[in-house]
Image 1 (cartoon, protein in one colour):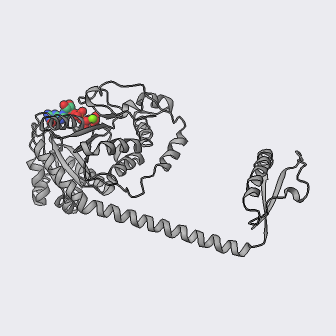
Image 2: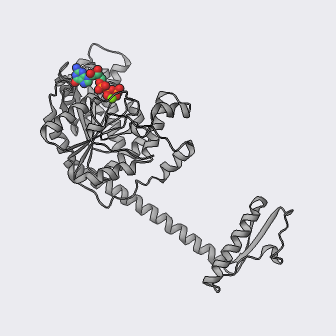
Length: 392
Ligand SMILES: Nc1nc2c(ncn2[C@@H]2O[C@H](COP(=O)(O)OP(=O)(O)OP(=O)(O)O)[C@@H](O)[C@H]2O)c(=O)[nH]1
Ligand SMILES: [Mg+2]
C-alpha cells in the first residue's frame, strides 16, 4: 500500500483502492509496530499542521475548501490532506487523499462491516502507513506554511480511535500541530446543544493535549456573539436557561461553571465557509496557537516522552538485573529444553547449522547440545519429544 501524493490539480481522480493487509490481526500488529513514542530528532517549526475536526455536518469540508482558496489567493503555501474515506466528492483538490490508498466500500465488504466500522478500519489501514505520510510532508517542509487536514464526519472515529491518536501524535511529534474544532453556530444556539458541543471540544483538548481553536462556522446564518457572551459570563448563560427547570438544565448550569477554566484558555474565531468571512482572523489565531504549541505543548510533550523513556529504561535495567541474578544462580548447572515432535526435523537441522557456525567462532564460550545425551546421528521418529541440554 503506497501513499499517493499529488499536486492539488491532479488530485481529483481516485486510483484503485489497495488494501494489502487483509488479515485483521496484521492490522493490529502493524499498529503496534508503528513507533510514535520516540522523540523526533528533527522537529520543525514549519509547516503548522491544522487538523479540522467537528460534529457531522458542521462544515469541515466546506471550511477546508475555503481555507484552500484563501491560501491560494494570499500566497500562503498550503498542503491539503483528506482523511475521510467515505466522502463522495471533495470540493478541493487534496495532495494526499486517503481514498487513493484505501477503498472504504471494499473494506466494508471484505471485513463484513457497517459504515462506521468501514471508516474506522480504513483509517486503521491508513494509520499503519502514516510514517510515509509524515516523510512526504517532511521532505516538503521547507516549501510549506500549513498542512490542512480534513477528518471523517463521524467525529468520534477520529478523536476516539487508536488510529486517530496515532495520526495526531505522529503529526504533533514532528511539527507544531493545532486542532481546529468547527462548531455549527446556528445549531448551537440552544444552551443544551451548545453545552454538548463544548463538552466535546473539551474532551478533545483533554485527549490530544494540543492547542485548540474554536471555529464558529456558518456566521452568515447566525453570528456567534451569543456564544462568546455565554463563555465569558456564566450568568448570561444561566439566564438563557432560566425558563427551563429540568434536570438537564440544572446539570448544564453546573457544567458551565466547571468549564470556566476551559473557556478562559480557549481561542475562538467566527467564520463563514460559504462567504469566506473570518479567514485572516483564523490564520492569525492558528499562528498564535502554533507559538503556544512551541512554548507550552512541545515542552509538555518532550517531558512526557522523557518520562516514558526513563520508565522504560528503568524497567529494562530491572529485568537485566534479574536476569543476571538468575544466571548467577544457575551458573554451571544444566537446563533441559524440550520441544514438540513436529518441530523435531527442523530443529535438528537448525541446531546442526547453529553448531557449525558457532564452532567456527568461539569454541570456548559454551558447549552445545547433545541430543538424548548420546547418539547424535540417529533420529527416532517415534519419540514424543526431543531433549537438548546445554550449559551456561
Ligand atoms: N450557510 C452556510 N452553510 C455552510 C457553511 N459551511 C458549510 N455549510 C453547509 O453545511 C453542510 C455541511 O457541510 P460539509 O462541509 O459537508 O460539512 P462536514 O462537516 O464536512 O460534513 P461531514 O464530513 O459529513 O461531517 C453543507 O450543506 C454546506 O453547504 C457556512 O459557512 N454557511
Ligand atoms: Mg466532510
